[in-house]
Image 1 (spheres, helix red, strand yellow):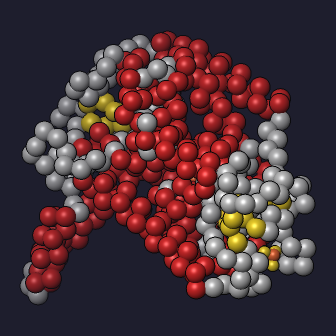
Image 2: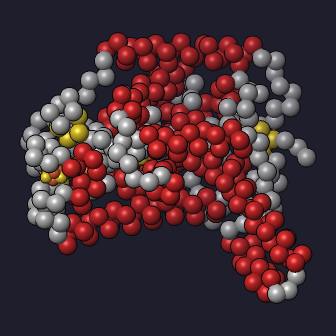
Image 3: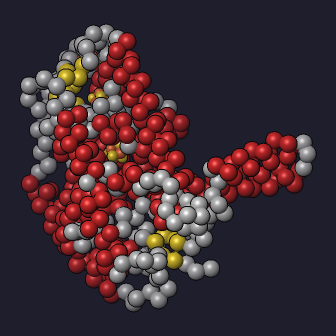
Length: 397
Ligand code: SF4
Ligand code: SF4
Ligand code: SF4
């Protein structure tokens, strides 16, 4: 990309990024809709595609010595690309990032950040350490915080059933009102039934709990843009550890003292004030917002920059605390689970591994809930201990 006032080429890059972001979001939703039993043994589409490319899930399976890791090696490709391009996944691909951007634009008027997320920036690294340290002991809680799992199960438990219920009720009301409403409502309802609506109305446990967690993430957007991404996302933290060394870098590396407009534009606050406003590739999502907003045309992205990088200081004490917390959590959570009387109605999905093995493999994405044609699989709250949160159970009807 050339260094010149906002050129046609730069505009093309900005539109390409937006288009790519929308494409991957729609692909995520479309694959979500395809995860439905259609009368054949195997699903027609690779509905778990996004999870196969998820390095956080790959790392957790690698550390838990899960045989499933062999199906997840594609994730390494994304790690390699991050070393070259930086955190492109977050700005160009991640459907949760796109969702948060969409809700922010829809619900909140543009306003300057309050700067709270900046104080919590390192928390995502500590959360990542905490989650991965327990993995070699088969404590795999990664799915609770993985952004793809989180978005998928929120769609599956809250939004998709709510959408189906709303359409069914609206269609029924219009049907009762009769003509002329049915001239429009019936064809629309039949078209939705054939494409978007579930095979039968779905109801899941934990909708309010799940919606509350999601609403908190969205509400945090009012405080600071991409609060979740900046402060908490463990997948973002994993990418950031590699993006710190990425070859592609923004220029100028330090904010111009006569302007600093980029600082206001950047939704990741990728300039470290403590480091004379040096650009941090670990935080930058390559959203190109600064490229678009710079009136002087000074911004460009280059593979040839030799400028010093902003350091990443996680603090030895905090890192040790995260490691210790991850290790201590293993017996604490395990003993808590073992202390509970076995729940006699806790029936796992057909073909599930033994309980311990099952818990270490499940990524709490909710895909099995979505694909179950009888709506018999339901998410677990505390019935299997903290470790079992959001794992599936069979509730016979
Ligand atoms: S930080 Fe996490 S949620 Fe945010 S865009 Fe990146 S991977 Fe997605
Ligand atoms: S907006 Fe342009 S001129 Fe202003 S600080 Fe950023 S790169 Fe410099
Ligand atoms: S530095 Fe520029 S490209 Fe990077 S996240 Fe901020 S606005 Fe986007």
